[in-house]
Length: 226
Image (cartoon, rainbow, N blue to C red; front, top):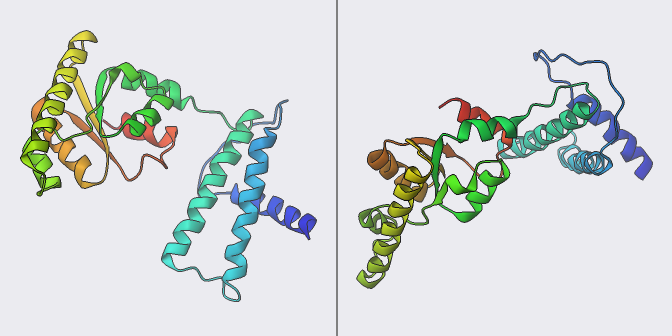
């Protein structure tokens, strides 16, 4: 049974790599080494997709939320396949992270959480040019997020706000940066920070649905569009 499923997964992988209507130039394969760990992950993910075939029998109809999950997994597999093909010269590997480093270098970047900074740093953004606000840049905005916040807590937040603003000023001077970019998720706290940073620093904005799911290539596309 496992051998049959393994063969089915290999066939599905071949189909997953064929996107109709796209113009991709496949070069002649060169010598290379199979990324066995990545290839194993692809096979496992393809086997997981078999559940959609079994659960949707006999019509194989997927509701909207099921279709979204199914297609997201297919797209994820496609990206992994492209990486393996890149290892053998069949597809050119884009240097997304190198381009991100170059394009982001002119910005002081603000974001809302430390784990967002980790993602940006992983994408080769200079961590010294990232400020994690953690709080809105005005106490009124904090009250909008939490109307029941006691006055004693607001005093502490005022100090944090002052520290963040000083950090922004210091880093702009230190790195001679004129451009400010705020990168946030699409939620209320992100919206408030982006709104205030645009007002105070004439900043540009990138709003993401999720930091967790974005790839370097997707982030590069957003950064290139500024």
